Image (cartoon, rainbow, N blue to C red; front, side):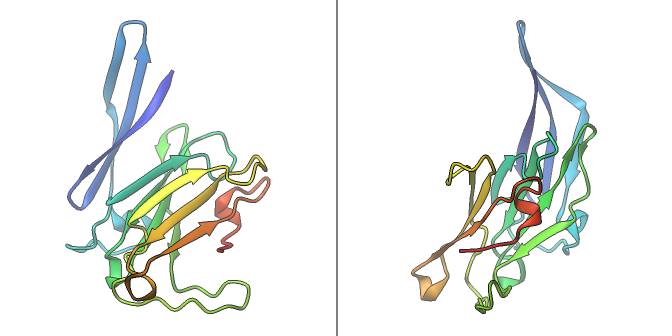
Length: 165
């Protein structure tokens, strides 16, 4: 069964296919991809810590695992980049999440040092068959830290919702 593998390297992310069969695991270098911030609409900049946190799962319900990449120092506050999966590997990232959006009428101003995206986890935390994306911001609230939960939505996945708690 082919699986995906993501490896962290400075300013870039390499993703390829890892095949596991009766003979043992093997890596297919022909299917290796190099992903950088600019592939998702960001700017490649030293010190952004692109790739500091990674999470993978089928966020949009299309049957292919997507890759979420944290860049906790991007712009001094942090950004999440989502690279949708496909039969041919990861597509150019078209989704970005930042910690300064207004949700449900409640402003959430970002502050330098939030480190939004320093930790990432995907899971089904409410037993509704949809994944939720949880992103940590350990520098938020004056260093007390905060956790953002992006709620999954039926038939759209996390990418269609943008709801935070």
